[in-house]
Image 1 (cartoon, rainbow, N blue to C red):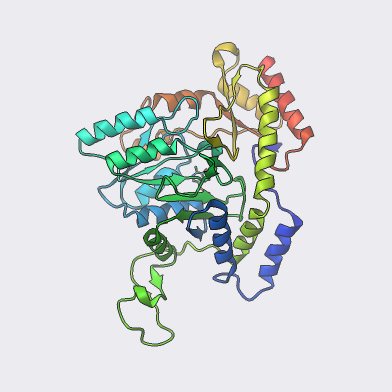
Image 2 (cartoon, protein in one colour; image 1 turned 120 degrees about the vertical axis):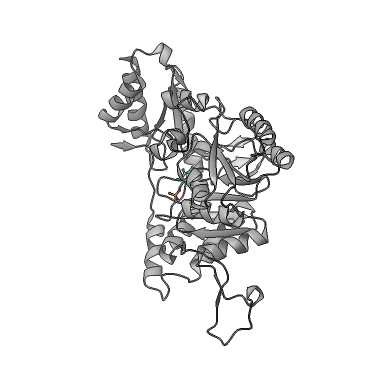
Length: 386
Ligand SMILES: *Cc1c(COP(=O)(O)O)cnc(C)c1O
């Protein structure tokens, strides 16, 4: 099976991990801070908080933005469930914005209309979580302008998008947001096994996220209520969790950062070849928006079903049977039984549902060889023409 995505682990990656295993610190050493610095250097965001997953990063970000019961958080209808669950962890409500039919990211028109209505009903979101699907940034300038008009915070779910650019600057720099989150799950651009990060330029948000990721405990005397009893002293000043990343994971993540430019370049080469060799088929290929340089975490094709005799489901299954590990990113979040209980009905976000009827993610990853990609292209051509 040729998967839709997978990690690439070099001998240097392995050596970096083994070095940690032979060292004194498996957790809370100096590799996590080095990984954090490499993320800040790479994106130009002032602060990076590395944690054990992007799901945890989204949770500490919502906590730092003081999302709580009675608050409303909005995200894209087409995303992984974690982009919505972070609001529910905080006791807030979640709602979904429909997607744009070209970029598959949050639709600015739908968002604007929904905000106007929410203002009238006094139900504006406290936080908006735009998701950079497949590694292509949302229209952050428009979202930023809307945030000023309607007074919401912006938390970018950039889980797909490390290594991408927007308006000539790295995604994750938080120029148009309060916080941006990356994922280091093995299918993403770089990996630490499991892992994630929350980046910000705001020192207060940085402090709050760090506290929440580590029990709400501080050893910083500036943050303490009391004068330390002695050298052992620390204080719990809020309720936190243990979301720390291990040194073992951070060593892998840090070494992968030294390879990120090669990772992104290869993904662009693969995308270009798909663009050239699939264009004669009844497919919509990923459109690249202005001011965007995608990280190409995913290469998503959409079936032009009116020109194809088979169904989406049959094509998907045939591709799998022919050895292509295709996938579908994503089921509209509100279709999941857990979300239906909040009253969402089929038809709620029509563009998201159109997308869901046609989308398939095909293989794209660093070690996809020319030969394997050729095989993938031939399989797709065969299944679509037969
Ligand atoms: C992968 C992913 C997450 C969750 O990342 P983890 O590191 O697995 O917790 C969240 N949002 C999106 C859009 C993702 O693709």
